[in-house]
Structures are given as structure tokens and as C-alpha cells.
Image 1 (cartoon, rainbow, N blue to C red):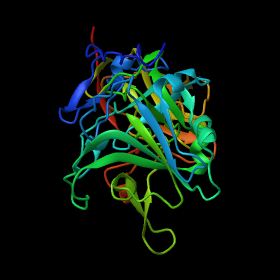
Image 2 (cartoon, rainbow, N blue to C red):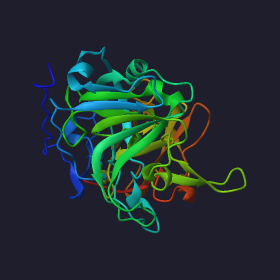
Image 3 (cartoon, rainbow, N blue to C red):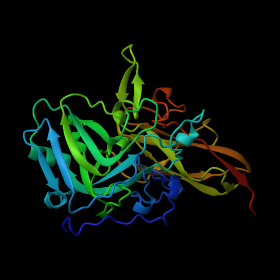
Image 4 (spheres, rainbow, N blue to C red):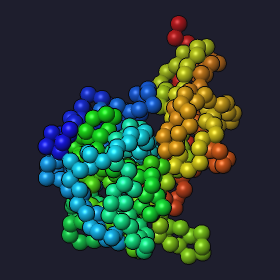
Length: 364
């Protein structure tokens, strides 16, 4: 296939995507429909900061500049001819779960479905950087999209800006420049014709509509790096603004959903997924009594860095009554999913346990 023949896949609206914001378009996936390890494209959430740009695949160019031996521009044809790789990766919006914060926080009111796992096909970033030749002073790789707009938030710069995020040179080896998702060209909403995939990082690093890679010699100071998607780190005694990067340890219950009525005396499967951008997962536990007692869930997927693991727990519902379900993940470094939100992160990194209230009734 050539760039002339390369067309975006159509995003089906029959998969249960929920509109959280119409302009720019933000669609939430139906987390309760979690079934396979891979999320169908029509159920994969969409996060946009500005309107989606129209990009002609035949005219597309990816520019690589900055602290490189030679500035290069790659057409889509050239990228398609380079050695390709396919990787599964879980992407989660850093604001996933924002609706559960108390007091309410500004921003897109995501529930549990701003997360998904897809198989991404493309060219490793390292392959492209080798063509350009990194200079020794290279320090950060800035990924810039074609989407542009004016940010109205307090502290935002005046005028139009492009969406851009920086990743450390040390992380470049994990980045994939993807042109296909689940075996098809990207949809326009998911970044056609090219996007970055940064496994293990929150998805704001996985820049869509990628048209420029700038190799910087100093830490990137862009708005979406230092003002938005950043937090105050006071570990050294003085608060320092740092970019949010790795996904936090988290598990979420997909089923049953809040308000479900289950049959007393029956067996009900509690199902969900867990993930982390850090150490691998050791276990997931489930509580059916609001956290008083815990039992081990069963993993359905093998461990793979940067990819969620589905889990399930078969609950023998003891009697009629009201129950509060919780899940918590523990990683191999014995970090445990917290019960409270870390206020340093404001409206982001929402990985605390979320209770699910269900009722048990005698149904026959």
C-alpha cells in the first residue's frame, strides 16, 4: 500500500462510544463491555484537545529537526516502506475517572472508559532518529501534532498553539510511530495518518496527527508539558513543576456496574482490568464488603509491559442486602493501589479504588 492509497478507517459509532464533549470531540469507551484483551476500534475512546485536522496522506510529511546531524522529511510512502512492528499497548487518559473526584474538578467528565488496549503497527522511533542522527547534546524528543488551537484556560499562552509533548531521550526506544490500529489504518479521530504510541505513559504523550519530531537540548517547556498535564513535586523541599509521565498502578471493575441487582445465593462474576506504567502486576484483590475483607482475583492475561491484564472473581452472593464492591491492585514492588486521590495531581492521575454499590435480591 502507498500513501496515495492510504485512507483513514471509519470510526463506527455502533460500539457504544459516549460523547463527553462534542467540540473538540471526546468520546468515552464502554468499559462495562470489556471482553477481550484488545479493545475494538469502535469501542476505543477518543481524546482531542483541538479539532481534528484534515491531512492528505499523499502530501503528508514527517519532519525531524533540532539537535540532529541532518534534518529529514519523511513521506508516508517512506514510512510504510520501513521495517514495521506491531505491539499491544494500553492507553489511558490522565483524567480517566475524573467524574469520581470530590469536590468536582473541571475538565472532561470521564467515567471509567477513557482507557483501552489496541494493537498498533508502525515504525519504531529509534529507526527514524537513526536516519537523522542524534547529536550528543540531545536531551528531549518533542512530538508535535498538526492539531492547533487557542487554549482558554488560565495560564495558557496567547494565540494558537500546536499540541505537543516531550519524552526523554532514554524513553525513545519504547516509542512507536503508528499508522495502523488493530490491523487497519488509523481513523481520523485516532490520529490518521500517523501518531506516536508511548507504552507505559499516560496517553497525552501519544501525540496524534504527528507531523514533527523536534530533538531539543533542554527540557521541553511547552504548555501541555509544564502547565497542563503536570504536577507540583515537593520532594526536594521546594515545589517544582514536573510533567506527568508513567501511568499509575490501577484496577477498575467493569462488571457489575453501579446499581446492578444480583441474585442472592447465586454466583456472580466480578470482572475488570488492571494496569501500570511501572513494575508488573503481582495480584488483584476484590472486596464485596466495602474493604473489610479481601479475596484474590484470577488473572485472565499473561504479564506484558504496558498492557493491561483482565481479571475476574467469582462471588458467591451470600444473602439479600446491599453490597459495596472494590478492587485493588498490587505490583511486584509491593506498591498497593490507594483508597484516596493524591491531591498533588489535581484533576489527573485518578487511580484510587472506586466503589461499586450493588443490591442482592431473592429473584425466585
